Image 1 (cartoon, rainbow, N blue to C red):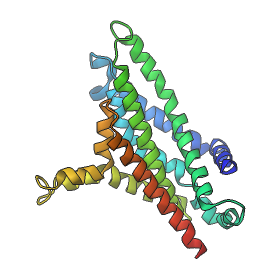
Image 2 (cartoon, rainbow, N blue to C red):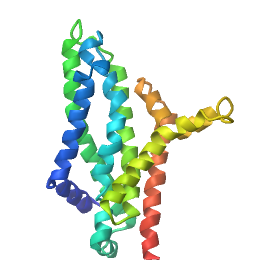
Image 3 (tube, rainbow, N blue to C red):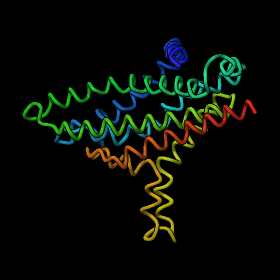
Image 4 (cartoon, rainbow, N blue to C red):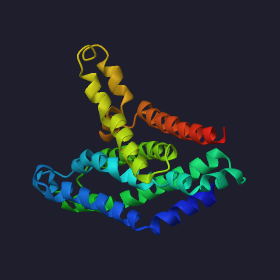
Length: 243
């Protein structure tokens, strides 16, 4: 697993696409947090990072697929996936190596946003007058959201040999899991009867709950379950190629 992990990290940082993806993510967040009037922290009058956690998921819908689109799709295209499966590596070791590498890259992309936290900490009146507990919960929710999108992106990359198709499929699946269930819950015949249960299927409901600073075990179990389902789906796709 660790050779796969090191290989993925090295390939990402040796590619211009990797740096562009991280740069777009940070620039996009900076625009929402510091410049756009409707979400500008400097005009809100109180110290929090709500705009960061409100708009980051929409940017992650494109950042995570950009990170994961080549993970298995490129192996399929070059025929190297067969070489990997014939080596003394199990399918799970291949999957976990690629998944953990992508999560690490996402975490590296997220680290510079701590500068926003430091800025708000210093700008607060008095200095340090911010809700650190809520911020920790929000960062945890954002990390789990990215980890879930990564599992979806790895699965999307495993079903094709084209990176562009993998990117589009990952964006579509992430969007469906993140937002579509909220829309479905408002449809006639569902709203007022089953809307609560439909919303619980989607990611957004659980992400919002964690973003309030309350880390509920039900939300953590949900994220872990979705990650497990998509990674198991990836395992099934790899196994099907052997069949």
